Image 1 (tube, rainbow, N blue to C red):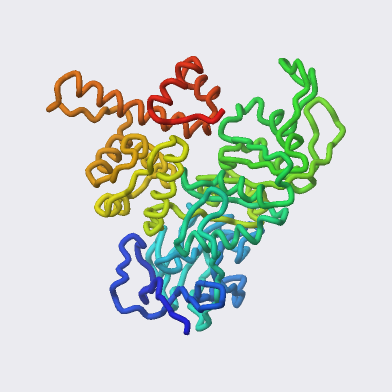
Image 2: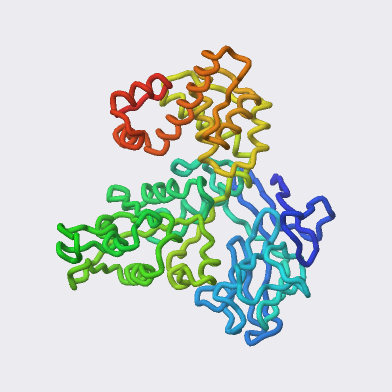
Amino acid sequence: MASLVTRGKLRGVTGHDPRKTGLDAEPDWERESTIRDPGREESMLVRQARLRVVEGAEKDREIVIGEERATVGRAEGNSLRLTDRLVSAIHVEIVNEAGGYRLRDLDSTNGTYLGASRVTDAFLGPDALVRVGDTVLHFSPLPKMVPVALSAERQFGQLVGASAGMRRMFALLEKVAPSDLTVLIEGETGTGKEEIARALHERSGRAKEPFVVLDCSAIPQGLAEGMVMGYERGAFTGADRRHIGAFESAHGGTIFLDEIGEMHTGLQPKLLRVLESRLVVRLGEHQPRRVDVRVIAATNRDLPRMINEGRFRADLYYRLAEVHVRVPPLRERPGDVELLAAHFLERASVRCSAKMARVGKAALERLERHAWPGNVRELRNLMERCAMLSPGQQIDADQIGRELRFASVPRALPLDARLPYKDAKEEALRQFDAYYLTELHGRCGGNLSKAAREAGLARHHLRSLFRKAGIIFRD
């Protein structure tokens, strides 16, 4: 017999600040549930909603919103495209979130109104009227609830999560991984966007071919086109040899365009042409070269807002977002903290060849209350420090508090003035080494040579410091 677990209720209000939404009031309609039925795939039931034009040039045009987010605007590619001149390229988006259907104005020129009130961010209630430009939209929930599959797995590549939001994302990733669809991954810093891209590559038919990372935030503007497209010797001053561009280097495999929101506007139309034609022309030559690549892009920026500000092309955005993946921040899935903490402690203990530390009940409650501005990366770094400082021991709430304070102000050493001078100094240095070396190890992916270059130390000296801290390199 199936068991139904309610995940969220939406109040019957026209619109309000979602951060102040009270879910304790009597709900008017159920938006989302999770259903488990033995012998059947676990799924989430999501109520659909209708968005209909009731005033304006596109009167009676409508769309149905389900699990995916919907956008409204003038640009081609919007879920609901309007011709209203007072409407921005991507004017608003409506996202199906845990608290209900959330309306966000994307820095539109002329604003978004619920009734007489201009809003930037609000939850929509039944029969809400939304005005954008000279167009009025009517939002209403539909009686039908549709099942959305949840993955049976709690891990996708290096990403770990048992919450419905993560397993919903895993189910989508599992479907698109074998394909060549272009994927746009959006998420805050530290949520694991590159890990998703690598896992998609490793689960595809291109897994044995190159996986090339192009960090768009680190490309000097004057060299951008050459790094992406390649160049011939003599193509410009300083080009003393041929350079194979990122797309050619990824031929047969996958190119990951990290921080795509940082790509300067002059290169964006050239990237769009490559995406549409799969042809690149090196600087200094005229012969186009065909490239066979799968494209995955990621950003922590709000690209629709950037489109309205003229800093990102709408056509490039929709070309990249054949599949749109939003990675939930850790604060939206506190139930995953215990699972992740244990996972990181185990991984760190294996790497350091040490007994595994354990998280006490009070410490876990402290972790679950934390806002995690650095997301999963912050939790991983904290657990790695704890694994090194307390091998085989139980981690208590006081230690978690100290580590969180230390991590939030990296330059401040946690000094205990009650200790003798020598002991206090040794403890401060131990804490410094634990923080610095853990961060260095994670940033360099366990590559000792790279870590030595970044630290400005000889390899043998740095290896000795790592061994002393309990971090064992395998190279």
